[in-house]
Length: 273
Image (cartoon, rainbow, N blue to C red; front, top):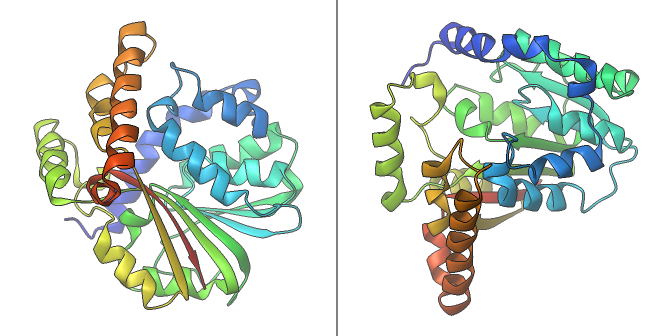
């Protein structure tokens, strides 16, 4: 696995820079638009809609108004901007300056620029934030990218206030799926910066338990992880039917044998400091 921060920054700048061409209308977000995008088969959110909807429910289980929130590894800032539209004061954090630029444009387009700040930083140095600065830190498919860097875990813990929450929407590692993930990663010739080198799983939960007083894990999608084979085809009725069948099989399986949830491929994690 690469530990070259500059290489990872260049990779994600190349990923996010083209999104700077989006119109303000396309960038604008609020709760209604965001949830609708999760149900739009042509949206990039659709594949993970079950994960994202559950993460949304846990993130907004407490009213956001007045909270100090950090969107950690924010990409183009969707989650952080929605938090701001709900009344939070939000900081966007990402290694990529291109991502932060788009995120701040999104905040302006959504009418919440005064409640959003942007920080292009290496996650191992969050000295731009004070101890206990945030009531909630949210990370969507991000923390598995940063844990490989020295001090990154200590830093994210430091900036959460006592009693504050860390809410994660992540892939979930298990031996049955990890090998297939890495095989697909190598066959697709994806760079190490794409993130399959280190997969969030029980090892990461044990790490969280050393610094948080409670850690809840809700695994999602076992058969449903075959959705990756349908990527780019969800606008076709047969693909949505196949996905619904897989998700139905998961529901039946977990009702009958709840312990098999450990073989899921995604999870929502809520840790309280």
